[in-house]
Structures are given as structure tokens and as C-alpha cells.
Image 1 (cartoon, rainbow, N blue to C red):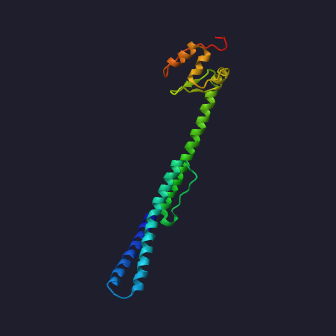
Image 2: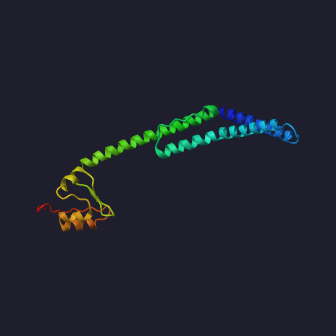
Image 3: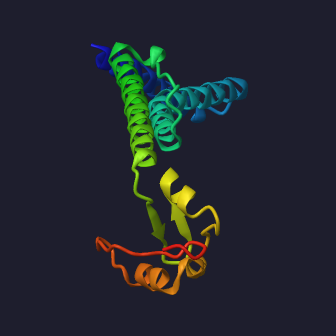
Length: 187
């Protein structure tokens, strides 16, 4: 029903343009009535602008929706009041989708916080050595163990013994290995 309202409104606007073009065509053949020709041309231009705005309203709202999704602006609301109830449903759908994206994002962040808390509580020290030589300490046990000589680069591993350093460097992703480290003379 709402879509029919949009179509009827569009047909009426296009019919007005067509009628204006017919009258303007007739008046152009007449040598007099310059003011009427100019007035009718201005009316025709106004009608064309009106149809363009009417049609581009939906495109603008779709573009605004996609921008809101792209930039995570989940507070946007969409209404197509001037286009009819069928388009109101489209606006409601856009608004519901953004609300769902917001819920999913919130749930994901909550799960991430939970996993981070679990990771912090693991009693074994967890660290990772990145390809560029940076080291990340992932939990409290790792930060406590390596607090005497802080680890920032892979070269810092030498402070805990050469066997420990070489053992870390030879590990492949997924390997498990028990390593001994030297911490101020204690192994």
C-alpha cells in the first residue's frame, strides 16, 4: 500500500512535468507571451528538482544506513514519513538492523572481557613473540615472572639464559616445550 502511494505520487509529479512540457512546447511556437514562457520554464525546473529530491530521498537514507554500519554509529534512526508506509517499514528495518548490530557488538565485547579475565587467571606465564621481534606478555603470571628484566624485544630473552632464548626462538606455532630459564642465578 505504501509503495503504491509512492508510485501514485511519482506518477502525478511526472504527469505535471509532462503537462508543463506540452504547454511550454505550444507556447514556444507563439512569438508573444515571453513572461508566461519564462514563468512556465521556472515551474518546470521546480518540478524537476522536486522529482529528483523525492526519488533521491530513499537513496540518501540507504547511504546513511550503510555509513552508520561502516562507522559503528548504531544510534541512527530511519524514517521515511514523506514517502508512505511501505517506506516506513524500510526505515523500521534499518533501525532494527542497527539495534541488532549494537547488541552483537555488546555481546562480543562482553565475551572478550570474559576471555581476557580467564587469560589473566591462568597460572602459567603466557607470552608471544611477534615476527618483528616484539614480545607480548599476556597474563599476570608472565608479567610477574619477567618483572626483573622486562621483556620488550626478543633480544631481551637473553637476560633469562641462552638456552631459554634459543628455545623460544626455535618454537613453531602450536609447539609445546618445557623451557628452563635463569633468573638471577636461579634455574
